[in-house]
Length: 119
Image (tube, rainbow, N blue to C red):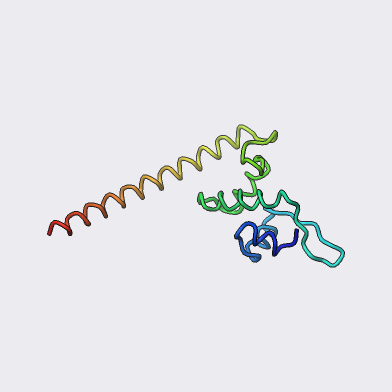
């Protein structure tokens, strides 16, 4: 599929898709005319990339993790390693800390809102 169709199907801009390709996160064949031609599996790959970005990972970390993940379901591939488990555990702990910080912020806001309603 061409870049425009991949962008439409994933909701990701063409600019982002070109960035993913430049970072080694996404691959496309080239037509004789020089256009990008993505396989069907690129849809799952882009969704996975978006999920990892949303989790706060940087493109260099995503590039390390993607070869260890299957695109269709995000599960581990045959090349998943014990180091990957350590890295992902550290990323999960970082996300847990961020969640805890957000919960504390929300609780503080709830207290302020409650005080303002009573006052």
